[in-house]
Length: 159
Image 1 (cartoon, rainbow, N blue to C red):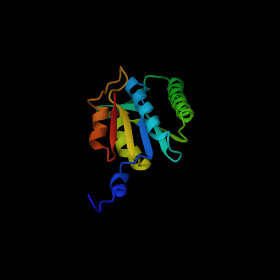
Image 2: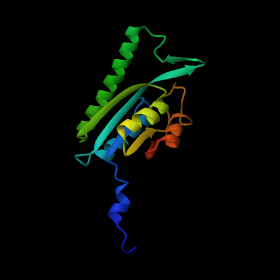
Image 3: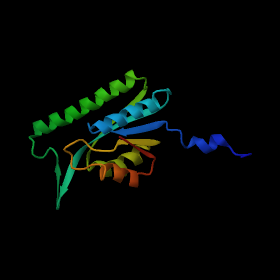
Image 4: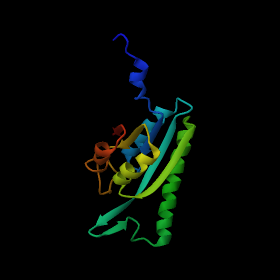
């Protein structure tokens, strides 16, 4: 292997901007712990915490998971989601992560992540749990599988 530039060869596997998708499931909590351990050792690494409020498609109409709730209840659900991400941010900062960004969006989680968030954020690595929160309609057959198939960045599935 003479003349081979190892630095150039392995630089593309340095993950300085790591995004983790959180839905409250046990697997997404494991993904969070992995992502924190990946970025906490280096001052300029960034952790992006992402959560999507799911919108379901039924025929020709879209329904938010909050459609059956009053606007007050929907607001409270969104605030709880924001509070949960802020708690994750505090945990990451206490663990030594210096740069944490929060992203909240709505829609079909896997499609929003692949089509909207990844192109905008351009993470070096995406970390997802293998299974969605219990009671959610989509499991690793769908959400994580869709993301691993269509994301244009490396994806690590944790369980």
